Length: 252
Image (cartoon, rainbow, N blue to C red; front, side):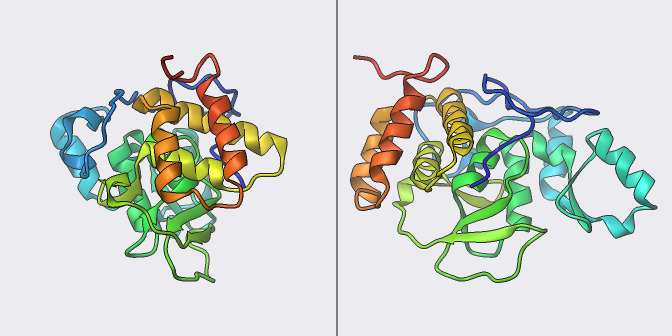
């Protein structure tokens, strides 16, 4: 499984590959111990991009994905990519950089890039919450099978039941809460050690930004995920992430 690589979100100390020409801008998310059912209406999670509030409203309502064939030519696309105006999905589509500055904007991008009536989970949900490079797979909660890729990405469905308290609306996209997202990342089987390091770094980012730890994750495991075959690996990965110096440790 390929996790968030590239630009490291603020508050994350894990080493990431940085682009040679430009660097993405991400806003810091305030820590919050609870999660509202509707992110868009909760001031604790409100994170605005640069500019006025009116500009942010325009960004949130605009279409975040464009077809690159509508641009003048390859040189134009290259320059816009170098300056962070565009971020390519594949050879024919890209999303606007101004939308990726906030969780609201990233949720809007995912809403347009994902199938209808799904919930963003795992790596896609992590991208909404902490940013970075767009993941290599579009992870969603769904009982459908998707054979065609979306914007050059394989759609990876997870057929599972999730308690409604762990589902939040962000930018019009339903997404698992930060704590539930961390649990899902830990539950996805990863064999390569470098992938486990990337997953652990992303989990630490989620814990640091949204102020949760092992207590919340264990509660989720005990209710929704106790019968998963790799639950032992998930517990070990979450424990390691919570007990690292840049992770949030539970008080004793």
